[in-house]
Length: 532
Image 1 (cartoon, helix red, strand yellow):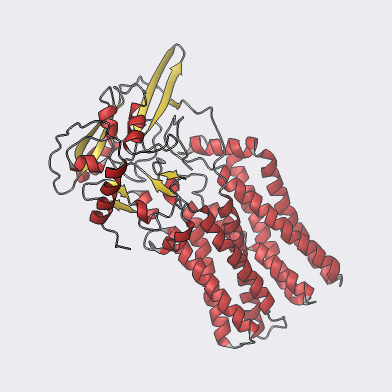
Image 2 (image 1 turned 30 degrees about the vertical axis):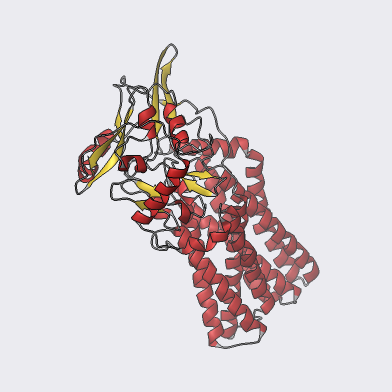
């Protein structure tokens, strides 16, 4: 494939547009030539917008998008009490940010910041991972299910190249949308904090957006609320990612347990050595989990491209680290299978542990993004590592089956600590929402997450807490007691049930993790289309 450059991307795009465009009109625009340190940007006049949504329709027609794909969206806000009310609209597409999170997070380098400042999405390089739809605090990138890729506003760059205005500008009957040139340094240092903000928009420091707003004079004390705040629905469950994350985290946990067993055995402790069967189970968990992530992609056949942007994308780093971990785990399994002993085996196990631990850390960093407050918490990383207790349960079970109770006792003791830690993390998370501080800067989004968690998914939340306490703490403790009395059969049955129950508990927890997230987004966005 030809290397990605600004020229090749634009040429490909313009050729595509020449075949599919539906012209809204040919209106010229007189923009001065860009100087060093300048770029194009949108200007939105909220005093003129009447909320007619013509800009949305024109954008869709120009770009041949179906009606559920919205590159430009109109948000609606309200203030006051009837009959003394105020209404405010915000027509927003891509803000062509100075520090775009979509570009930094994209694992395939499918985003380019052009010389004219436009944040351009290069469709052929997109695998449809939708990570940019999470990273963008404005939810601008939109997944096109029919094409299997993400698409977004490009400021009608093909029109600008020939001196025409973008479709949304042409269509607006109130002349509320325009294009102008901005000096980036002046905008950042002097004007952004004054002219780049509007009610209920995300923190401008996240991406440093360039859109300039003209707002009406607002009465003192007027508090605008999103017109759709009474609407609340769960987010997409992301089932492939639910199982992928839980399985890979359990796999790394099992591999850590194997490494600890081999390390203690090599030091001369009176403990059983790990076996090829144990390594196989750790490898199998990763072998099943990792391919599941491809089912989340719009173009799964190009999943390998996810490793391209290791410099800035945590998704790329996760793919590389966990892929390497699986490879090393496979090599270690062969070493056990063919009775290859010595320092080299222990060394490769240590390398596998390091890769696995870094891979799970990178996995957690994928979700710790400012655009999604309920994910962007330290507890996310702790929870992801905590799921590794399942791997310890599995290795302990295999030890019990072979009557190696001494090794099982050591691992079960560690399991109890990790399981108790996981329970405390989840309990603290519940208490965080229970006593959510109204002064929190993301109170609006977090409070909506709270409503989903405590009202919509109340039964699942309760089941998650109680099941974790039962399967991660009570049953491992019972296993130790029965094993100590020599009842290995009963202990093995209890531990097997604990493994199944723990998997179910973690799946429930991860499901709640995905469906209760509330992004920052655009306030009053009734017609969001299919944003994830």
